[in-house]
Amino acid sequence: MARLVRALTGWATGPTGKLKKAQNLIEQGRRADAFPLLAAAAAAGLAEAEYLVGRCYLEGAGVPSSGIEAARWLERAAKQGYLEARSLLAAVYIHGLPSAPGATPAGAPAPERGPTDALSSLLAAAQFSSRATAEPDFGRAAQWARKAADGGSSEGQALLAYILTSGPDELRDPAEAEKLYKLAAENGSPQGCLGYALCLLRTVTDQDGYQEPARLLRQAAESGLGTAEYLLGALTENGQGMERDAAAAAALYRKAAEKGVRSGQSRYGICLMEGRGVLKDVVEGESWLRRAALQGDPEAAAMVGDIYARGGPLPPNHAEAAMWFRRAAEAGHKSAARALGMLHLTGAGVARDPQQAADWFRVSAEAGDVQARHDLAALVLNGEGAPEDPARIRAWFEQSATAGDLVAAYNYGICLAQGVGVERDDRLAVEWLRRAAEGVVNAQYWLGRMLLEGRGCDQDLEEGRAWIKRAADAGMLEAQVALAELLVNGRGGSRDHHEAAQLFERAAKHGQVAAMFALGALYGGGHDIPWDRPRAQQWFRAAAERGHGHGQLMLGRYLARGLGDERNPAEARIWLERALAQGLSEARADLASLPDSNTVEGEPASVRKRADVSAAGS
Image 1: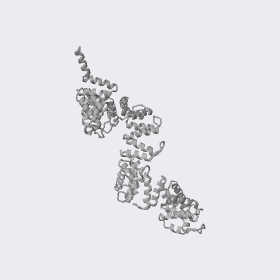
Image 2: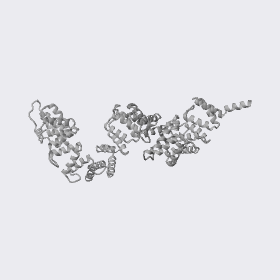
Image 3: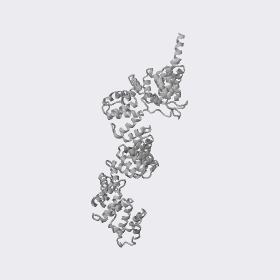
Image 4: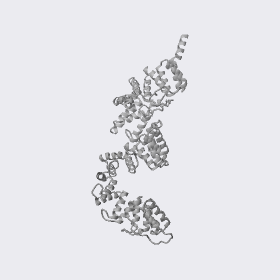
């Protein structure tokens, strides 16, 4: 009897007993008390205890976390054939071990790294102490994952499949990966269901093809995999493999978002912003987009930037917008780079800096944003940008123009006409402008100008005027002003001052300063429309207040002589001095003739003369 008691006591205090007692303590939540017992059992060589000690070091449960110690104990258990240890060890190496003892990854793996959410969540719990970063070791990961897979572990099969699809090129084998994912799914692995669903989604060609991936994703989502919840939400939102259901999709996005899946955070944020399947809440929507952006989602960062740039339900904040656009742009988002360039160009939220604007337009353009190429071209024509930009944009436009892009053909024509990035060639410019003119309004205007001037072609006033009219009829303000001038002087066709006045007024109402001056000249007398000098003075004032030198000169003359029923020598002096400062030397004589009294001695001959409408282009 005594011998039996001693035997039972030895069993209770032996490695197996300590393991059992430790497991009981873990179930009670007493991990710190359990760890010494686990360590003793592991030191005695029990594979399960070694595995659990590795997990404790990985999770920081009852002991400070340590990736090195976790790997060491997991490897001991794995070498004894413990399948869970082999799978987890493979996941640890995918995550990456630090290069030296005590050095560990700076952060947990992103939830979207692959179809291993359950194992990744375990890894994410490990808060390693060092600042040193870690690199994945796919070679060792593949070695242990294959051993786990060969032993029948569904998790090992899913991990190996992930390595064969997302690891280094030399390890990739998509065909074998799909077989492993399918096998893992059949064995009930949520990760296998997720991975196999992704494989099937790559080859879907019709609605029926979504049925099986949707079933697999539903199975994986029911196990709590955040990535599966996000993907199932996307299928639900689009009605692929199931009925379209915006509310159900939003609920799935929310589940994924709460698990840290950044795509889920982004989509749920959009749902809240737009009230799609959920009660609209702009503030909460912006919050979820912000979380996704902080996790490195460039599209979400760009959307947050756009929210603050546009304003609306949230007040505009261009400084905030610039910060988020920069985050997205630095991550390679081409539209955000262009938006940031526009902020620097206008000085909204950041210091106005055309050079910075050019730099960001260049980043966006090189990433393929066509509009950014036009923005950069406009800056180059104004003398901004880098020395190599003219040749760069000319090459972009030439390549696209040769491929049949009419807008690019127009821009390439302008480069040739102005010698931007290429030697000036008016003849070739006309050829490209003529190609583009069939569909691009600006090209119609430019081709008309070239024909009127005889640049790169024989002068043809009638055809030039016809192209200008075509652009004017399409609503181009510069073309309307140019056509009105042609109607005033009768170049390329008949004179029609009434139609010219209508065109000038249409352009003036849209802010065309030259058109404002021209209207003043038309109503000032000497044309085929009734004189109306008060109206003329109003248009001269509109042009003068916008910095038009000839408008300032004429307004000064009208005020000096009371031609518009308003005589004001003091204000006249102000406007004449401004005109003189712009280089209009004739204002000097008008200033000298200003009377010292309120008596109007007479009207200077220069004012009585008909105003020259051709000055509208100045």
